[in-house]
Amino acid sequence: MKLTELLEIKSGYKPMVECGCDLKDIYKLGEEKSRIDASSVLGVGALHDFIGGQNGTIHYIDMQQYKEHQDIFDTTIYVHQDKTFDVIIPLHAIFITQRYKMIHEYAHYVLHSDKGMCYACHRGNNDIEKEANTFALGFLMPAKLFEAKQKKYNNNINSLVIAFLVPPEIIKDRITLQEKYGL
Ligand SMILES: [Zn+2]
Image 1 (cartoon, rainbow, N blue to C red):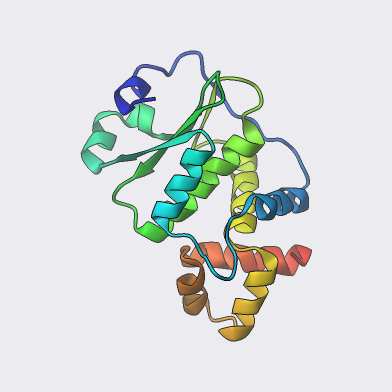
Image 2 (cartoon, rainbow, N blue to C red):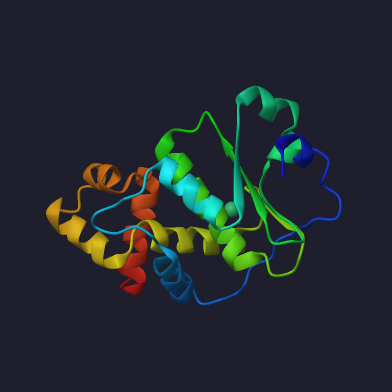
């Protein structure tokens, strides 16, 4: 769908609801879907192409567009009847944040879009956000690779940010998951 078409569609779309699956299983599903391995921690362009290959379209919006259509662009993903989806990424976010957002939105698509036309927004309910976050942690930082890099960099957060190209708070979430569930 084109960005201009997204401005027209709000009615008929329902807010996504949580899948209620075990967080460990969600993490494992993220790992399973991941294309990230020791030789390729995919950059923004490669993740953009990955989303394209999953029937998704990414729209980058700037601050001006966001201000003008905040009601629409507060929504971060729309999934349509034909199972295609549109993701909205703020252009002004730094690239490590863009990477994380792309996979977080893809997680909503995988986990929360089985009930037809729906959307999620970043002010949505905490349970779906937690589930999408957990999937993204598995996708972006699979356990084997994460452990290897932790060892190599002596668990230094800044080094892990550079190794995995995600924001520091996401590295911390990943470590929490590791400590809590051994993942
Ligand atoms: Zn979300």
